[in-house]
Amino acid sequence: MEIIQRYEDEILTILLKGELDARSSIDLDETIKVALKQEQTRIIIDCQHLSYISSAGLGVFISHLDDLKAYGGKFVFYGMNVSVYNVFEILGLHTIMEIVRDRFEAQTLMNES
Amino acid sequence: MKANLTTICSIDTQEEIRAFLNKFFAGVDDLTEQKRNQVVLAVDEAIANAIIHGNDSDTEKSIQIDLDVNKKRIHIEISDIGLFDEIMNNDKKDKDLKTVIKEKQKGGLGLKLIYSIMDVVCFYTQNNKSYCLMVKLLK
Image (cartoon, rainbow over the protein chains, first blue to last red):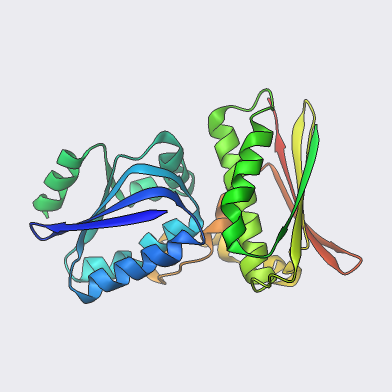
Protein backbone atom coordinates (compact mmCIF):
# COMPACT_ATOMS: atom_id res chain seq x y z
CA MET A 1 0.00 0.00 0.00
CA GLU A 2 1.23 3.47 -0.84
CA ILE A 3 0.44 6.48 1.35
CA ILE A 4 0.95 9.82 -0.32
CA GLN A 5 0.49 13.11 1.56
CA ARG A 6 -0.06 16.65 0.34
CA TYR A 7 -0.54 19.69 2.57
CA GLU A 8 -2.17 22.67 0.92
CA ASP A 9 -4.38 25.55 2.13
CA GLU A 10 -4.33 24.14 5.69
CA ILE A 11 -5.78 20.84 4.52
CA LEU A 12 -3.83 17.57 4.61
CA THR A 13 -4.78 15.15 1.84
CA ILE A 14 -3.81 11.52 2.37
CA LEU A 15 -4.00 9.44 -0.79
CA LEU A 16 -4.31 5.71 -0.16
CA LYS A 17 -3.24 3.44 -2.99
CA GLY A 18 -3.80 -0.32 -2.70
CA GLU A 19 -5.13 -2.45 0.14
CA LEU A 20 -5.55 -1.15 3.69
CA ASP A 21 -5.28 -4.16 6.01
CA ALA A 22 -3.71 -5.15 9.33
CA ARG A 23 -0.21 -4.63 7.89
CA SER A 24 -0.64 -1.31 6.11
CA SER A 25 -2.86 0.20 8.80
CA ILE A 26 0.24 0.40 11.04
CA ASP A 27 1.82 2.84 8.55
CA LEU A 28 -1.40 4.84 8.19
CA ASP A 29 -1.75 5.14 11.96
CA GLU A 30 1.78 6.50 12.18
CA THR A 31 1.08 8.99 9.37
CA ILE A 32 -2.00 10.33 11.17
CA LYS A 33 -0.19 10.51 14.53
CA VAL A 34 2.55 12.64 12.94
CA ALA A 35 -0.08 14.87 11.32
CA LEU A 36 -1.79 15.43 14.68
CA LYS A 37 1.54 16.33 16.29
CA GLN A 38 1.98 18.94 13.56
CA GLU A 39 -1.56 20.18 14.25
CA GLN A 40 -2.75 19.11 10.82
CA THR A 41 -6.28 18.16 11.81
CA ARG A 42 -8.28 18.92 8.66
CA ILE A 43 -7.69 15.70 6.77
CA ILE A 44 -9.12 14.62 3.43
CA ILE A 45 -8.74 10.92 2.63
CA ASP A 46 -8.48 10.30 -1.12
CA CYS A 47 -9.86 6.78 -1.64
CA GLN A 48 -9.89 6.78 -5.44
CA HIS A 49 -7.12 4.17 -5.55
CA LEU A 50 -8.10 2.28 -2.39
CA SER A 51 -9.15 -1.22 -3.45
CA TYR A 52 -9.73 -2.87 -0.05
CA ILE A 53 -10.24 -1.96 3.60
CA SER A 54 -10.41 -4.23 6.65
CA SER A 55 -11.42 -3.46 10.23
CA ALA A 56 -7.80 -2.61 11.05
CA GLY A 57 -7.95 0.27 8.56
CA LEU A 58 -11.31 1.45 9.88
CA GLY A 59 -9.95 1.21 13.42
CA VAL A 60 -7.23 3.73 12.60
CA PHE A 61 -9.80 6.35 11.53
CA ILE A 62 -12.10 5.59 14.48
CA SER A 63 -9.31 5.83 17.04
CA HIS A 64 -8.40 9.37 15.90
CA LEU A 65 -11.93 10.66 15.33
CA ASP A 66 -12.47 12.29 18.73
CA ASP A 67 -8.95 13.78 18.84
CA LEU A 68 -9.51 15.48 15.49
CA LYS A 69 -12.86 16.86 16.65
CA ALA A 70 -11.30 18.16 19.85
CA TYR A 71 -8.85 20.20 17.76
CA GLY A 72 -11.59 21.45 15.44
CA GLY A 73 -10.64 19.14 12.61
CA LYS A 74 -12.18 16.13 10.91
CA PHE A 75 -11.80 13.44 8.28
CA VAL A 76 -13.57 13.78 4.94
CA PHE A 77 -13.42 10.78 2.60
CA TYR A 78 -13.96 10.84 -1.15
CA GLY A 79 -13.71 8.61 -4.20
CA MET A 80 -14.62 5.32 -2.49
CA ASN A 81 -15.43 2.36 -4.69
CA VAL A 82 -18.58 0.31 -4.00
CA SER A 83 -16.75 -2.46 -2.22
CA VAL A 84 -14.93 -0.15 0.23
CA TYR A 85 -18.10 1.88 0.89
CA ASN A 86 -19.95 -1.36 1.61
CA VAL A 87 -17.57 -2.13 4.51
CA PHE A 88 -18.44 1.25 6.07
CA GLU A 89 -22.13 0.46 5.51
CA ILE A 90 -21.99 -2.97 7.17
CA LEU A 91 -20.79 -1.37 10.41
CA GLY A 92 -22.98 1.74 10.13
CA LEU A 93 -19.90 3.94 9.80
CA HIS A 94 -21.29 5.64 6.68
CA THR A 95 -23.67 7.55 8.99
CA ILE A 96 -20.86 8.71 11.28
CA MET A 97 -18.03 9.45 8.84
CA GLU A 98 -18.25 12.23 6.27
CA ILE A 99 -18.09 10.55 2.87
CA VAL A 100 -18.58 12.41 -0.41
CA ARG A 101 -18.16 11.61 -4.08
CA ASP A 102 -15.32 13.79 -5.31
CA ARG A 103 -12.49 16.16 -4.41
CA PHE A 104 -14.58 19.28 -4.96
CA GLU A 105 -17.29 18.13 -2.54
CA ALA A 106 -14.65 17.09 -0.02
CA GLN A 107 -12.98 20.49 -0.09
CA THR A 108 -16.32 22.30 0.12
CA LEU A 109 -17.37 20.21 3.12
CA MET A 110 -14.03 20.77 4.82
CA ASN A 111 -14.20 24.51 4.31
CA GLU A 112 -17.73 24.70 5.70
CA SER A 113 -16.45 23.78 9.15
CA MET B 1 -15.52 -27.60 -4.87
CA LYS B 2 -12.79 -27.70 -2.24
CA ALA B 3 -9.48 -25.98 -1.58
CA ASN B 4 -7.10 -25.41 1.30
CA LEU B 5 -4.17 -23.22 2.13
CA THR B 6 -1.58 -23.37 4.89
CA THR B 7 0.35 -20.23 5.75
CA ILE B 8 2.71 -18.94 8.42
CA CYS B 9 1.39 -16.68 11.19
CA SER B 10 2.35 -13.32 9.74
CA ILE B 11 0.20 -10.40 8.64
CA ASP B 12 2.57 -10.04 5.68
CA THR B 13 0.87 -13.08 4.13
CA GLN B 14 -2.68 -11.65 4.18
CA GLU B 15 -2.59 -10.00 0.76
CA GLU B 16 -1.61 -13.34 -0.77
CA ILE B 17 -4.36 -15.14 1.18
CA ARG B 18 -6.98 -12.65 -0.10
CA ALA B 19 -5.79 -13.25 -3.68
CA PHE B 20 -6.20 -17.00 -3.13
CA LEU B 21 -9.71 -16.53 -1.67
CA ASN B 22 -10.79 -14.15 -4.45
CA LYS B 23 -9.65 -16.61 -7.11
CA PHE B 24 -11.43 -19.52 -5.43
CA PHE B 25 -14.71 -17.68 -4.79
CA ALA B 26 -14.75 -16.26 -8.33
CA GLY B 27 -15.68 -19.77 -9.44
CA VAL B 28 -18.73 -20.00 -7.15
CA ASP B 29 -22.06 -19.57 -8.90
CA ASP B 30 -24.75 -17.59 -7.06
CA LEU B 31 -22.15 -15.47 -5.29
CA THR B 32 -22.33 -11.86 -6.45
CA GLU B 33 -19.20 -9.73 -6.53
CA GLN B 34 -20.39 -7.81 -3.47
CA LYS B 35 -21.07 -11.01 -1.50
CA ARG B 36 -17.71 -12.41 -2.61
CA ASN B 37 -15.91 -9.29 -1.34
CA GLN B 38 -17.77 -9.59 1.95
CA VAL B 39 -16.89 -13.26 2.45
CA VAL B 40 -13.22 -12.56 1.65
CA LEU B 41 -13.33 -9.73 4.21
CA ALA B 42 -14.85 -12.00 6.89
CA VAL B 43 -12.16 -14.66 6.33
CA ASP B 44 -9.43 -11.99 6.31
CA GLU B 45 -10.71 -10.66 9.65
CA ALA B 46 -10.75 -14.13 11.22
CA ILE B 47 -7.21 -14.80 9.98
CA ALA B 48 -5.94 -11.43 11.26
CA ASN B 49 -7.37 -12.22 14.70
CA ALA B 50 -5.80 -15.68 14.64
CA ILE B 51 -2.39 -14.35 13.58
CA ILE B 52 -2.18 -11.28 15.83
CA HIS B 53 -4.15 -12.22 18.94
CA GLY B 54 -4.26 -16.01 18.81
CA ASN B 55 -0.70 -16.76 17.79
CA ASP B 56 1.21 -13.54 18.63
CA SER B 57 2.43 -13.31 15.01
CA ASP B 58 4.71 -16.27 15.70
CA THR B 59 6.08 -17.23 12.27
CA GLU B 60 7.03 -20.65 13.63
CA LYS B 61 3.31 -21.40 13.78
CA SER B 62 0.96 -21.92 10.86
CA ILE B 63 -2.71 -21.47 10.04
CA GLN B 64 -4.77 -23.68 7.77
CA ILE B 65 -7.81 -22.53 5.80
CA ASP B 66 -10.21 -25.15 4.43
CA LEU B 67 -12.87 -24.12 1.91
CA ASP B 68 -15.79 -26.28 0.85
CA VAL B 69 -18.58 -25.09 -1.43
CA ASN B 70 -21.74 -26.79 -2.61
CA LYS B 71 -24.93 -25.45 -4.18
CA LYS B 72 -26.38 -24.42 -0.83
CA ARG B 73 -23.51 -22.99 1.17
CA ILE B 74 -19.88 -21.94 1.57
CA HIS B 75 -18.16 -23.67 4.46
CA ILE B 76 -14.91 -22.17 5.80
CA GLU B 77 -12.79 -23.60 8.57
CA ILE B 78 -9.68 -21.93 10.01
CA SER B 79 -7.25 -23.58 12.42
CA ASP B 80 -5.31 -23.24 14.71
CA ILE B 81 -6.82 -19.91 15.73
CA GLY B 82 -5.34 -20.23 19.20
CA LEU B 83 -7.66 -17.78 20.95
CA PHE B 84 -10.70 -19.83 21.79
CA ASP B 85 -11.22 -18.62 25.37
CA GLU B 86 -10.59 -14.98 24.47
CA ILE B 87 -13.16 -15.01 21.69
CA MET B 88 -15.77 -16.87 23.70
CA ASN B 89 -15.50 -14.25 26.42
CA ASN B 90 -15.27 -11.32 24.03
CA ASP B 91 -18.02 -8.71 24.23
CA LYS B 92 -16.55 -6.49 21.49
CA LYS B 93 -18.85 -7.81 18.79
CA ASP B 94 -21.82 -6.51 20.78
CA LYS B 95 -20.30 -3.12 21.53
CA ASP B 96 -22.14 -0.05 20.31
CA LEU B 97 -20.24 1.85 17.59
CA LYS B 98 -20.36 5.10 19.58
CA THR B 99 -18.70 3.33 22.52
CA VAL B 100 -15.96 2.01 20.22
CA ILE B 101 -15.32 5.59 19.02
CA LYS B 102 -15.43 7.04 22.54
CA GLU B 103 -12.97 4.47 23.83
CA LYS B 104 -10.70 5.10 20.79
CA GLN B 105 -10.50 1.37 20.12
CA LYS B 106 -8.51 0.20 17.15
CA GLY B 107 -9.76 -3.36 17.51
CA GLY B 108 -13.09 -5.03 18.04
CA LEU B 109 -14.63 -4.25 14.68
CA GLY B 110 -13.36 -7.43 13.01
CA LEU B 111 -15.68 -9.68 14.99
CA LYS B 112 -18.59 -7.32 14.28
CA LEU B 113 -17.89 -7.67 10.56
CA ILE B 114 -17.59 -11.46 10.73
CA TYR B 115 -20.91 -11.82 12.58
CA SER B 116 -22.62 -9.32 10.23
CA ILE B 117 -21.46 -11.02 7.04
CA MET B 118 -21.62 -14.75 7.79
CA ASP B 119 -24.78 -16.75 8.49
CA VAL B 120 -23.13 -19.10 10.97
CA VAL B 121 -20.04 -18.37 13.10
CA CYS B 122 -18.75 -20.92 15.56
CA PHE B 123 -15.56 -21.32 17.59
CA TYR B 124 -14.55 -24.67 19.06
CA THR B 125 -11.59 -26.71 20.27
CA GLN B 126 -10.69 -30.27 19.43
CA ASN B 127 -7.53 -32.20 20.27
CA ASN B 128 -5.87 -29.04 21.68
CA LYS B 129 -6.50 -27.11 18.46
CA SER B 130 -8.84 -24.12 18.12
CA TYR B 131 -11.10 -23.74 15.11
CA CYS B 132 -13.21 -20.99 13.60
CA LEU B 133 -16.07 -22.30 11.48
CA MET B 134 -18.02 -19.94 9.25
CA VAL B 135 -20.88 -20.67 6.88
CA LYS B 136 -22.40 -18.44 4.19
CA LEU B 137 -25.67 -19.64 2.71
CA LEU B 138 -26.12 -19.29 -1.03
CA LYS B 139 -29.37 -18.14 -2.73
